[in-house]
Length: 225
Ligand code: SF4
Image (tube, rainbow, N blue to C red; front, top):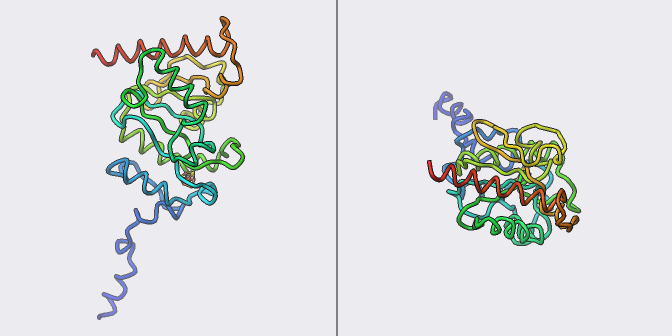
């Protein structure tokens, strides 16, 4: 082999950069990296772009309909999610399903559910800024592939991660905002509702009822255009 040919073996083009995505945080994940959600989920399950990959049992990527009009983004997986590999399957997830059902939205048909980080933070702590930054390209790819018309951001962490808005969730919940041309609404996290069971006017559950009705109205409006 000529020395020229030997040298060409070390050119970047001889390495498949995409194969390095889940193992090397320095390799970017540009928009369009994944042809489908199955490819993305495979990478998440072998990913070590942040330390959360060291302690997970399963990456928690998605549940629901990948063609849904509504995407729901939560904070991160808890114990039940880590064990099953599915987001929002514990008590908070069961409550979320009931909230959706109260306005006749079906979890398997009408929504696609995911999280800001795909691996469980130890002791259910809030994911760090670095962990969210490492995982965000996967979330952006999910948004690109699912192409939802409405994104519901559950809790302040999800709002901050996607939009950069650092305001408290009680100040901005229920308000429609635009992000990258998509309608988003911050809503209270279902686990917050579990800790605040009152249904009185002005209570977290009452506020959620107002918000989910507004979401249903917008869903109908978009579905009929
Ligand atoms: S949380 Fe995201 S970036 Fe971190 S290891 Fe898991 S999949 Fe990779």
